[in-house]
Each structure stands twice: as structure tokens, then as C-alpha cells.
Image (cartoon, rainbow, N blue to C red; front, side):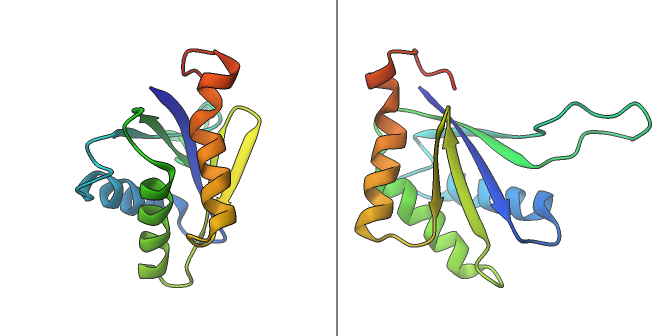
Length: 125
């Protein structure tokens, strides 16, 4: 499994958008079987606040998912949202902004998904 962080940018309520994207990905017939996601925060909760700021989705992606499928699903979600939020996929030091399902974006998502094999890190980010 490959671990990928997913973030949305330039939105008023990131948590609502992330929840929507996670529901979209898991409901997709092709993508949903290959991803397991959870909402998370990039920083620990502060003692003076209730709960954690949800600002990312942590995805575990199986090897059976193609870059085209993941990129297409994320882009389809984006086009359904007001303002087409920017979405960033990150694995280790490699980061890809999904802003369409063009050839360059697909190439970058392929590199993101395949980086596990090149680095030999066993799927940890």
C-alpha cells in the first residue's frame, strides 16, 4: 500500500471539502476498492482547542489503482465543486497538484504512486 496525503486549497471550509472528496473517492466504483482513507490533521490539537483541525486526507492506496483512475476521480470531484478547489497529492517529497486530467498531471501522479517501488520504503510516506 502507498500512503498519500490529500489536501484542498483556497476553500472556506477545508474539512467539509475533504469529507466530500473522501466520500466521492470511496463511492467511485473503480477507485473505492483500491483506497482506504481517513481524515487527519497535520498538527496535533492545541490544548486550548476542542478537537483537531482537519486539513488532510490520509489515503492508503493499493497497487491495483492506476494513476489515471485516481487523477480522473479527483478531477471529476473538483469540477463538481463550486470554484473547483485546488487539490494536492503528496507522498514523501513528491507533490502533485491535480488541476485536470491532462497528460502531464497523469505522468506526475504515476510518479507519485510508483515512488514506493523506486525508494523501497515499503509504502510509508
